Amino acid sequence: MASAPFFPSLEAESRRVDSLLCVGLDPSLELSVDDVFPRMRDVIDAASAYACAFKPNAAFYEARGLAGWMALKQVIAHAQAAGKPVILDAKRGDIANTAEAYAAACFDALGADAVTMNPLLGGDTVACFARPDKGVFVLCHTSNPGATDLQEQEVGGRPLFELLAEKVRGWNRSGNLGLVVGATYPGQLERVRAITPGQWILLPGVGAQGGDLEASLEAGLDAEASRLLVNVSRAVCGARDPGAAAREFRDRINAVRRRPRQARPAVGAASLRDDVALGLHALGAVRFGEFTLKSGKKSPIYIDLRLLVSDPSLMGKVARLFQEMLAPLTYHRIAAIPYGGLPIGQAVALATGRPLLYPRREAKEYGTKKLIEGAFSAGETVVVLDDLVTTGGSKLEALEPLVQAGLKVTDVAVLVDRGQGGARELAAHGLTLHAALTLGEILESLVRHGRITETVRAEVHAALAGA
Image 1 (cartoon, rainbow, N blue to C red):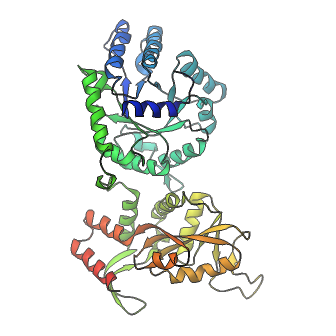
Image 2: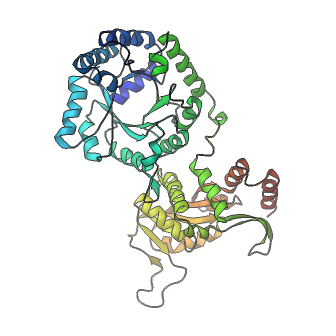
């Protein structure tokens, strides 16, 4: 292909043929080396009308020695002659001049437009492959059963695959990096999409590996129903009629893309919000029964989010929810409201890398007698963070010292919105409320997973409506 940047070229071809299908060109090892290029040529010719890209896996050519490498170069050139971007699935990864040599082999010697790579050696390795006119798909969560052995292990309270997704988002300054997430893990795919809403994701595992195509599309499509490159290898490459097989997959993909977004089912049990809602209930932070509130009123639900300090794993998930929620906002610091918001604020500060401060409930009677703990400068913007919002009055009271100190406050973020007018009251004072979870969403999760009945949910809604 021409030296145009890879991802714009991929996007243009995707629009031209109205497809997100990528066909994997993986010749069976039963084929003689002389038959490899003719067979792959026929697959390319038959599937080109329905695919926006092709992806030869280097292993099936390397296994055949020098003749296999020559066949691979022919396959890449033939696909490009058909106007298709070619991703070399090589999963390379090394350091310094060795990585540069691998990149030269993939891009210069073989002529591929993009490559898959292993990021375990870090950002400097990725940089060796990230040429301005080439694409790199970085392994994030693979499709094999052993993916959970390492990729889901927690590092600092977060699964490794999420940290990888965030790293790639940060490295993607030139817009030439994508991610690889397997179709056999739609819940993890949903989380990666939330972390990297605008990047291309290469989706292996559909077809012979048993990945759920529809569930993966629901989880991985971006806001424009695009930027999810669905790879199908053996189910097309090995089909009796590759063209018909490619057309069938293209049409199945497009059927999901064209559904109204509100009609798309949630991925469900694997979602991070479900995890937090179920975790709060298991911890006892959300309880049902008959409780007397501070106001003296009776309530069928009691929320005590201060219990979060006793569950570091759940606190880590809460921090990730806040991280996703705060990502679109522009701010310098986090201002956590004591006492319920303070431990959450610390976790969110660690997850986001943003400095934390907090307004004191009362001024110190000694030393500096200051009302705000933490370093800051007047004129900076802060996001006010707390655990729960009911009416909003306590938030207005707590942020007053921040405003008096010259800080700008336009956003308030909470873990749970009880839905009792807090957003309206804050909006009346020029503030926007952001809630990681609404009480309604928590109740929905608990009903869906059998933790409470529909009757209990109805009782809570009725009690809140009459409050």
